[in-house]
Length: 62
Image: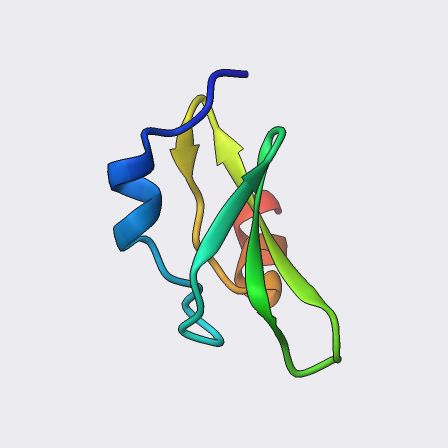
């Protein structure tokens, strides 16, 4: 998986915490803790960030 351009990572924010996102392989991870105390992760679908909350991702997959 190719890395997202740094210019894009500079503007992307976690929709839950508002924190910056960093790419770790095929996912983006928030730099601040979410409501459960851990970092939030978001998938990259064919190189496109899917910035949906966990509960919305579950509905999308159904």
